Image (tube, rainbow, N blue to C red; front, side, top):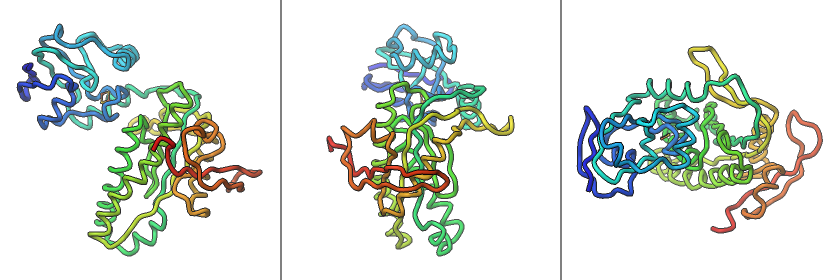
Length: 303
Ligand code: FES
């Protein structure tokens, strides 16, 4: 049992010391920011240790890596990684979404860098027709509900939500990862889990609107340029390059072969031992010359 004090907020006794400080604060309904989903990538969960630093367990590798990257002092800890074995008093440093935006901006500020990443595009089929049948208020609500589900899947698989485009979503995997096989598996796992998440959205849609969504997800791995793009007051960390266009084209093909998850040949080379494949298609892609092999992914082999 340890006494945990969140300075100026709450204090409580906690007996489950397996939990991270973030899990403890969320358990007690403290609105603790955790933009990356507790994956040691954003630092929005950071806290200043006011007392009891000796009771905190040493930083794990992930926390150490981010602390070094951001130059955090030793009394600043990532709540999503830090665990305690005794009494501790901490103060949250990122208190609202405005603070979180600033923290993310510092984290991602860069002049641009070239690196391989996995790009995932998803899209709702027939969304234009759907939106013509419903009130604007309902559409915003439904889209937010849908993106909440899909976004959680991306974050849970170490992805970064790059942008929303109407009913489309673009996510990146491997921004902070060097291992190509790993980033490809994270992305394809997310793509498959999106289908499961869609079932939850569809249950809600069926009950309330007598509608069902179908989605297509296209995934490709390749070299991109990553960086902040946009007006200095509203710049956004994103990826550009041919690989991004390619991923979008792969997603576009899901409809023509009536498949949910399609991956490019480069992706397939990284994941083929771990996934169940359905159709393989040789096709031309809009805006590209030559034929491309695309693979339908049905599931993970271990499932
Ligand atoms: S929640 Fe992102 S680093 Fe802790």
